[in-house]
Length: 260
Image 1 (spheres, helix red, strand yellow):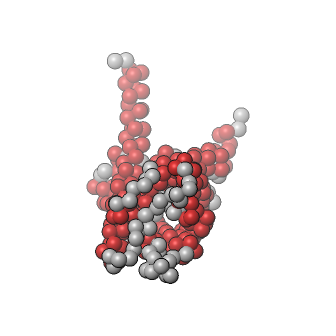
Image 2 (cartoon, rainbow, N blue to C red):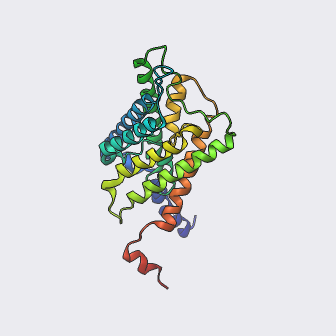
Image 3 (cartoon, rainbow, N blue to C red):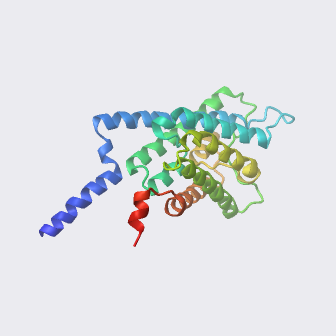
């Protein structure tokens, strides 16, 4: 093997290690990852518990309104992000985590741990809700199902745009050069609120694959479940890439580097 080949391999390996996040598995890094895992688990658990609780109809004359559901999910998300944002970033959504990973904001292994924590947390939240709800009420516990007159591709399209607006807001308020991070929980909560106000009649307005997974696992209803993974993840990824490459603020030093 030539010296140049050795050099290329030696420079690629640290980059690959950094991208995967292997360096985070030190004694100190492991402790931070564990805290972040628990934060994402609890955050998504509470999102599913309180959000899905708002969808329960206690009688035929006492059903939830779209406004009630929208505010429950939006405010629950805002509160949770405010509580755990400093620990894990407050993703509580695989679409957020995957978009952050694909734009090089978090490592691959951290993203994998976050998605596992989010899915387990959502299942736990829906499971607790099922245990605390009488058997003769609750229905499907807020399981997201496309409106019967929607084609699956239409439902996926709606979830695409819900994921898009959510991640556009996330990237916008978390841009470090804008210094708006203190407003992030409220802004993200409002994005979720608006998405629910608009789209609950269409798809149940998931915006979050883990949120839909938790309800589906406990209720056993899986109708067109793929819509709630593909739509938000694709929409969020497109929004993240657009923001990173077109909208993100750049430091003065970066602007100078771009000059001819």
